[in-house]
Every structure is written in C-alpha cells, then in structure tokens.
Amino acid sequence: MTGKIIGLGSYLPEKIVTNDDLSKIMDTSDEWITERTGIKSRHIADPVKDRPSIMVVKAAKQAVEAAGIAPQDIDLIVTASTTPDLIFPTMSTTIQEAIGASENCGCFDVNSACPGFVAAYNTVESFIETGNVKLALVAGVECNSNFVDWTDRGTCILFGDGAGCAVLKAEEGKRNEFIMRSSGKRGTCLHCESARQPYRKDEEGFDKLTGFNMNGREVFKFAITEVPKIITDLSVKYGFDLGEIDYFILHQANQRIIEATAKKLKQPLEKFPMNIMNTGNCSSASIPILLKEMNDKGMLRRGQKIVMASFGAGLVWNANYIEY
Ligand code: ACO
Image (spheres, rainbow, N blue to C red):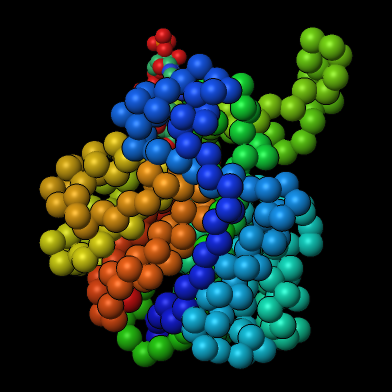
C-alpha cells in the first residue's frame, strides 16, 4: 500500500516584493541577493487577507477540487507550519471545517520548520501504509514575513509567504521510503522565539521579541553537507540508482544550495526544479507550492520517480522517495 498524490493546490499572496523594492528600505541590492541566493522576488502576505489559516484553506480547496474527491471521505489532515496565526486550534482543524471534512477525520499539525512538509508527508504515508487512512490531505503554510526581523538584511531577504497542499490516496504499489534526521545540539544557528520573553528586556525595558535568528554560513554548510548525504543514503538503503530519479524536489532555500547538491550527487541541474527566484524561501510550504507549479506546467506524469529533500531549523533534515 502506498500514498499517491491525486490533487495539488497552492496559494501565493498577491503582493510581490522585488529585490529592488527591498533595496529601497534596507542596505542591499538586487545584485547581492540574486548572486547569493537566486531570489529575485517573493510574495508577502497581506495582514488581513492572507492570514495563514486563510492561505492554507484556499490551497486545500484547490487540492480537493483537483483530486475530484468528496471532502467527507478524507480520513486525515496534517498541516506543517512554523508561523500559524493561531497557536490552537490547529491549522488542520481549520481546514477540516472550511472544506467540509467529517468528524471522522483526524487532524493535527506538525512543526518541523522548513522540513515540515516532508515530515508531514512521511507521517501521512505511515498512516496509509498501516491501513489506518485511505484518503489524506497534507499541507504546508507559512507567513514568514510576520516573524522575520526586517532590520536583519542577512535573513529577511530570504523569505516569502504562501501555502501548498496535496491530497494523498491509498493505492496498491511500492511503498514510499524515507529517512528523517535531526541534531538538536547544532540547533542554535537557526532559531525563533514564539512570544515575547519576559526574562529579556530591550533598551526601553520592554520584553524582547527576536524574529528569525540565523547564522547563514552555518546553515549553508549544514545544508550542502547533509542534503547530498541523506539522498545518497536513501538510495543505498532502498536500492535505487540516482540516475533513475526524474526529479529531486528540494526545499527552496537558496539556489546555491540546490546547485551544490546537484553537483555533489553528480546529477544534471535540470532534474532539480526551482521556483525560488519568484517565491523566496516559503519554509514548509516551499515543496508543495513547487509541486503544484510543476503540475500546472505539465511536468508531472504517473510513474515518475521523485526524491523530496528538505532541511532547516532543529537542525532537521529529511528525504523521501515516491513514485508519482
Ligand atoms: N545585502 C547586502 N549585503 C549583505 C546582505 C544583504 N541583504 N546581507 C548580508 N550582507 C553582507 C554582510 O554584512 C557581509 O558583509 P561583511 O563581509 O562586510 O561583514 C557580507 O554581505 C557577507 O555576509 P555573509 O552572511 O557571510 O554572506 P553569505 O555569503 O554567507 O550569504 C546567505 C548569506 C545568503 C544568508 C547564505 O549564508 C545562506 O543562504 N545561508 C543559508 C540560509 C538558509 O537557507 N536558511 C534557511 C534554512 S531553512 C529554515 O528552516 C528557516
């Protein structure tokens, strides 16, 4: 038994912020950002219209419609998010209510930072393989613009907002395979506080709130070391050849990380689809947004062999192998 993607949906806020726009409000340039990251523009959420719970419902409705299923038949909804507008109830129960799924549908959220979508996908896959779930919706949504420190030019230029969803259906076939890894001891290079911390005060005596806090170089080194390794380990563990893979769908964090991974794996860059130039890093929404875009472009066909790989805060990194 395996989970097959039968419907995809995504939502990107209407507002587009280019590198040139950013260079008007901070000391940066299109040249610097493009050269270091590949990013040219990103979608930024409207504080009212594009709350995460609204973005993810739009993406979920699209995915359900594309799948052609009755929402009442969905057994499980799992949403990955690090930046939800509500701590509780979960984004998943918000989706359940909005799409009209039944009360027999299990709902929970996953917080695994940028690798969240792959973690959620692997979780759903496990429920399908044990026969507990026949139809599931897996989602990723982020409103990074709410949490980045807009005075930290080394970090804020990287991120964008958006949501993506996939409907997975249990079918006969080779099961999906995955590896998940993490290192709490290396986690300090990327962190974000969830609320004002009363034990720390700023200059004016107010509780301090720090946004995304990142040592970019450390994260970069971690990604270009661990991502090629986990993909290679996945291929060895499950006995497939990297040459057989049609697409390596990587978390869209930085074009240079993706290029370095392709080079280390000795695979052509064409097998590594990218949309980071127009989306920035949408954390746990990046992979489903890219999948939807690939589907719209007619790039996805049944039977294609796909590896998804993701990495981020934790530190956490993971990869899976699916047959589309
Ligand atoms: N514009 C212009 N100059 C800048 C900017 C900017 N936006 N940001 C930093 N600089 C300057 C720095 O001040 C520094 O100047 P200095 O040498 O005079 O001190 C210089 O550029 C180099 O800065 P570095 O930080 O060393 O630049 P680096 O080459 O490492 O690139 C970057 C920075 C793009 C952030 C890179 O390290 C990176 O992409 N890292 C990975 C980050 C990432 O993917 N994070 C997300 C992980 S997923 C998650 O879970 C959140």
